[in-house]
Image (tube, rainbow, N blue to C red; front, side, top):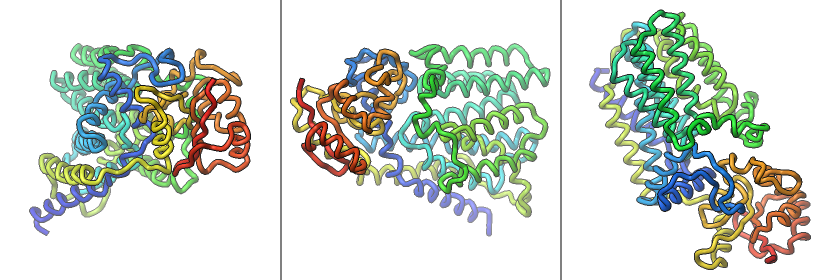
Length: 480
């Protein structure tokens, strides 16, 4: 097949890969709802939030604004275009990430003196991008920070290869963006920079330009509204192992079928190491760090997916009969094809916007509650941890939302000695009547699939539910 025809085939493959990233799977993450609500509040009040809003605590609980940049951007897109706007932000994030993955793979090959491109490189990157989309692109901060981190590593390697003010400025700028878009993952930026510093020391190449660039990356991270506390947000959410109550933080169950892609990735990553490390200090440090993050939990496994092109790119030459094949697709052509595919997906979302899944979220139930609520009033609604963000989005005040950190403070402790976060996670059990008595919500929403034993106990405590919808039932509490 002629090279021109192969390039057309590659272009079609790029567009097809994007079209396979079905837009409906970007919606219906529980965090998206409260991200929009917080961003909208900040836009309306022209302030960065340092306290929890729309909760039972009347804005008294402190909050670390570790995702405020993402929330404001998402709210702007939502206010301008509604739910299709949220997907537009997803599309732009993919347009940032996928070229970054390809550039990262090419930079890796260049470091080892290989020809930058390879016939399998683009196909491999697209395969990784599709899985990242389905696994992690759920209209949450990581869909932006993922691309920023990939491009940071690209410029970090280019800076180490050839010191210059342009890659240095890019590194500092990307550090600042991550610190304000998704501050909780900024530590990864700091650690990667430390690896580069150590590499420079070992290679006896640490000079003033490198020192100033690395210091700039670290210091500029402090320029965020939450300051030092935001940068080390991980220490807050892991306190007393509160984070272990959330599935994303659990150890990865490699023996389950759902984890098969992650297990295959881990095995493939290990197989690439003999081809990828090549005695280079930074490559060894990065491989060790990514291996640790990749097996820690599902949340941090994302970093292995993001950086696997860096390691796999140098192992592709081991594939026989492809070393002399020179067919390639230029980055400009890749971008055009990506934009074409994303434009089709975006147009589809505007024509047929995916609805909020009424089986997973109390859509009917909140319609009922808000119909009974006077205009301008926010009812106190007790719902599960995973649905509280949607309740807040629809106009209710809630016990907790997905931010977690305000709701594990001593000020939120209540009955049973539990924090608000613990009451939200453990409360829909035999303890629900006691929690309702303490927190005094106006309404309680329970899931349809609750066990009959628990449900009958709640009916005995609260009376028959006033409404039954697709998601579950609504109990109306007596006014006190």
